[in-house]
Image 1: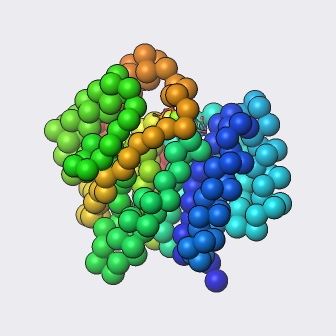
Image 2 (image 1 turned 30 degrees about the vertical axis):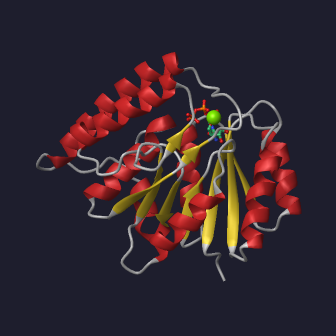
Length: 245
Ligand SMILES: Nc1nc2c(ncn2[C@@H]2O[C@H](COP(=O)(O)OP(=O)(O)OP(=O)(O)O)[C@@H](O)[C@H]2O)c(=O)[nH]1
Ligand SMILES: [Mg+2]
């Protein structure tokens, strides 16, 4: 029997934290008696993350470890989603695994008339984002651009999510943007194809300070959003069809 739930964990240079996070997720799910698998997708690490993931796969029968050559968060998430066999797929970060989110979001996605995607929103009423003001501000601007420039209905895309695999995974093949934009493109495509999305508030308490530089990320994200906007417009033109990655 395939498991009901797949947890995808993208991992890059996570030798310090991967084991603790895998144990936390596996223990929490075993306690809940859920049938699950964990798919760790490492790419581009230089610190032994892949070896740790492989060792943990030997210890936990529920765990699969994938390795890809090039460091890319979005590609890792995409590979994890396509490799998943659970009916519901949830993505966590190694430094942000929220079992409470699973308790709230998975039943919504599993419900017969439920949404195909439930995002853990850092922006919706009831959320508590404890990151520094610069990162909160960037998330706020990003969210406004997606709402007003792309017509997105949810207030957050980049972070934890629960997805009905059968409905959402086929859309991943049309996603062209990697890095931080993959999950945004995926949710936009899900909404555009008529799937319903919903959100639940999350409390963001990171286990360590952010590692990526916000200064490097802003220009890359702005360029990516312009390219994504253009790509989605072109697809709406007569004869336009989604380009397959
Ligand atoms: N496979 C893979 N995972 C990545 C990559 N970059 C980041 N990750 C993973 O993505 C998650 C979040 O990465 P962090 O380095 O904590 O990101 P951050 O700088 O705190 O920024 P946020 O996106 O705001 O969390 C962790 O699980 C990382 O291991 C990558 O290039 N490849
Ligand atoms: Mg982080």
